[in-house]
Length: 390
Ligand SMILES: Cc1ncc(COP(=O)(O)O)c(C=O)c1O
View 1 (cartoon, rainbow, N blue to C red):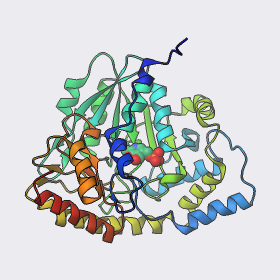
View 2 (tube, protein in one colour; view 1 turned 90 degrees about the vertical axis):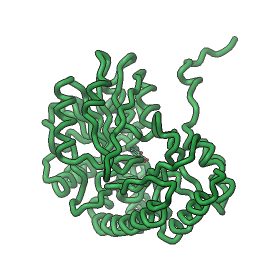
View 3 (cartoon, rainbow, N blue to C red; view 1 turned 90 degrees about the horizontal axis):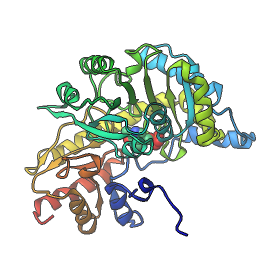
């Protein structure tokens, strides 16, 4: 007898990004700019904290919602960077930020519901929403003269009686958009008037190219009882992508439910990793972030210099996160373009079509790697663009 698997599971396929990366992941000549991470290992002080925790025998289950001292330290970091008081009872550390997003999706989305998503957007979110049974409705950001912009009229046109929530990722992957204070107000008015829950993906909040310590957070603008889920994480600002640790801030009434959801999804986040995350917040993390931001400012300038003025390229300078999302004249199929570029030039980019409808002539590149490798990758990309074949 044939096993009866769920049809939606049988239909799952890796995103075009994963498909391209699989083609060149093991080739040492490839300069890979497809994933959202740099090329340096996590800082030594964080690795040392993990080793100390292991040597101290911190190998047991922790409370499902995370170590109390880590949750307190995350609350403290909101006080320092945003000047807001978040009760640690609202913070759950279930494992990765990806897992936190899954839990947030499960908490608000039921089969048949619709989730509004500002596009272009990070493809994994679609899977999280669809696995909860919901449908994603993409609402494009507007390409302004100098920056991407929120298009509230487009949001209003996309609402239906089934719309339950809105996903907003700022600073945004892949566009580099950072929601400004006016956009935050407009977005909030919209969500409140349509009684929508807000899934705020703030994993890049510390990666902004302004004098502020962080991008504006929705946590600072909403009351704690409102249906807001704000996801943060250690992967990006502290270069801890492989550690799988992030957090979810949720309304206080959900604390008991979060204990169950965290427990049944992951039992608890990895115990010694939580001690490493604590060190990231309490030891030299700020120095690390300052250095990362300085490197990214430099790298962003390199991208704008080497790519921004190419006649085939339209590129807005990113305001945050660490991606450039150029539109390239003459591309009809971004997946085919990325495949060819990988084969001929040994540069790994993410195809624009991974990030939503209408981005088939875009590519995404991550500029968090060392300036030397980035420069070489950009030069290879430039010469591929000069040669009009791809
Ligand atoms: C927008 C966005 N949200 C969430 C995540 C997940 O982060 P983590 O590695 O902490 O699970 C990523 C990772 O690339 C991302 O780009």
